[in-house]
Length: 495
Image (tube, rainbow, N blue to C red; front, side, top):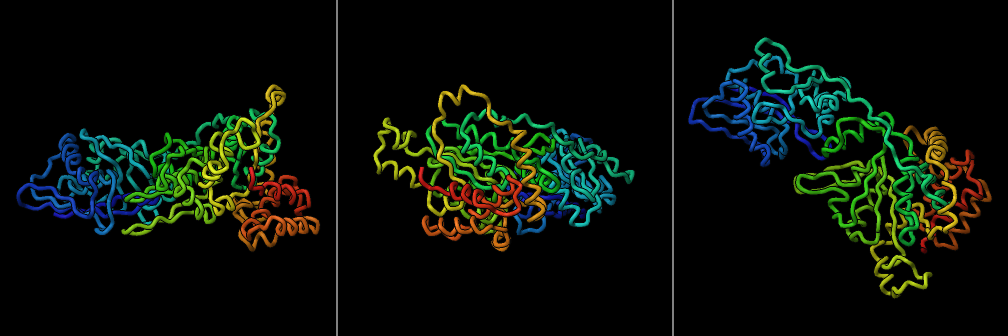
């Protein structure tokens, strides 16, 4: 007999529907899976066999052929175990799977029949809905996450034996309730950054406009402290942003099952490879820039990163996505993040202005060679950070994150009214930048800077975007001279 169910395999952060066809006929006992399965899928034969027997069903001692279609798509992971076992029993006449004609099944089977969670349940539920399915069966642990997909019924299944109710024409499992929002995160407060007014201003501008920030200065000056407090002044995730971040985290096996409105913060070590940073592998997997989507990517000790890894950031910083091309196809992954980086001025970290620095000019030049001009030109804000004084360190705390966040939220509201919901000045298209209102004094200041600093066309546009953010923070409708001066000041490239 022949039976068919549907399941899914992950393709990057997206799900692809798979038709699971099982044929059982007389012959020497054999169980074969075809359709480009990886090792985890091939091993499903043993998991399915043990789970079926241990749940009290009769495993057919006949020739079994399971086909996973489309046949030219590589299948990875154990998510098809539940669909495979159900189709097998349907083909053997043990179960009547007619009630599941409009349903998909997802889950990994344990040897005792328990249904274990899988990665990407949210994306799979959304793909089932897009393919016209009425509902989807998922592991109990994945139910709250999958239930975030609207317009499709989600049922939680904890054990394979629950499918015995198909004999009575009933859909197994219990309805899943959407995952609740997690408790507010206890984020480090910006008040810990004492003094450093110039750096605090840059952090606020970066948070408001989504601008990239590069901090250059000696160790212990507060660069990492400021970067790790940036999430505390960012607005919370809203609407579709929450689902975007949840979808990525689910596909990568991250999170605790609860949905958070806190923006992602990723800080990979400087030994990360280019593939680890932007994504890659076979099949392609998301990298750190995709995990930081809608949040912050912090690269500490920027000059210690490999040149290929840093150069791979250039296109995602411009486009907001990365395309990974492989022999079997190409994949586009989202990567709209705020880049925050910290670097020392030289190998010893003190800088040539410090009399204790013993670095030669050649060694300092080699150290900075990891940063190409093309990459730094894509970073909107560059700040030279110096060691804080003892008076500043012993003085009162700085302004709190809550106070700064209130100004950031007000500026974001102005940007949303101008550019559309969820968009920031850093994402403004050239035509939108041309429409920014700039007074005559500010325009003249930018023209002078363009001539004296020999700005590139990209730098010219980015200065206008930063100036617009400074004006939004001040509540000004037009970009004034002081707003433009601040934006030009943050384009300095010496440290």
